[in-house]
Image (tube, rainbow, N blue to C red; front, side, top):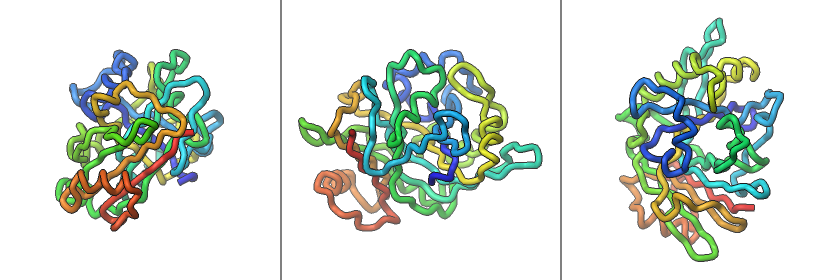
Amino acid sequence: MRDFLGFGVVGNFAFHLEQAGEANTFALVKTTCDNAPKGIFPFYVPNAHNFLSNDCFDNNYLIMPEKTLVQAEPEVALRCELEYDEDGKVKDIKVKSFMAFNDASIRRDTTAIKVSQKKNFSNASKGFGNEILIDKFDSNGICQNFSIVSFLKNQNGFFRYGECAKLSEYNYFYSTLIEWMKVTFNTQKDYTVLEDLLSITKQSGYIKEAIISVGATRYEKAYESYFLNHADEISIVVFNHNKYSLELIESFVQNDTQIPDKSDISILKQVIK
């Protein structure tokens, strides 16, 4: 996916921003309704002339900058195809697959002006699990059967890191998310912590392939203020909750069990460096 565009949706899961201490960051951003996402940020643009062109994907390690506080952000990412019109606006977004994703973010950085400056912070600041093909992106499709959960292994043991949640619990998902993203790509301007998205897609040369992370889920209460340490291990799992129990998924991760069926489980495991 090094030739893809990388974007993230922010504020698409209830109370995550509050847990992460980022709610005030978006105080000036107005939305059409209370539960609407706050916006879209870029985290990887191959042809950019700044830090966004830094190849930030690594599915084995997460490299933290020195003297910074970093949290993992467990979420689902969609592999999409963007379709542009003759004016360079996004006229359609086709979803091809979905996967576990870590949208790790720097916290408490008072020097960061834009959200993107907290995202692409090293050559290993993002990671994704194996792709699961999508039959149709609606409530009658495969995503309706999947949940996301995450785990932390550190010097004190093995713990649930992020709450287990169904993908359908995202504030905006399916057609609501797609329509919102199309409007946002075409109308979001450079304002406060967000960026002009049309200028970014233009700068990229209108790359069609994109990976779009759709929003970080909530942390378990005990870990909403936990910052990653060297040698920690974070695992993010998207799984078919009709086929696997949460207890079985936890056992798979804790015991490093080989994934039995990659069409039913997407897993990302990263060691913190």
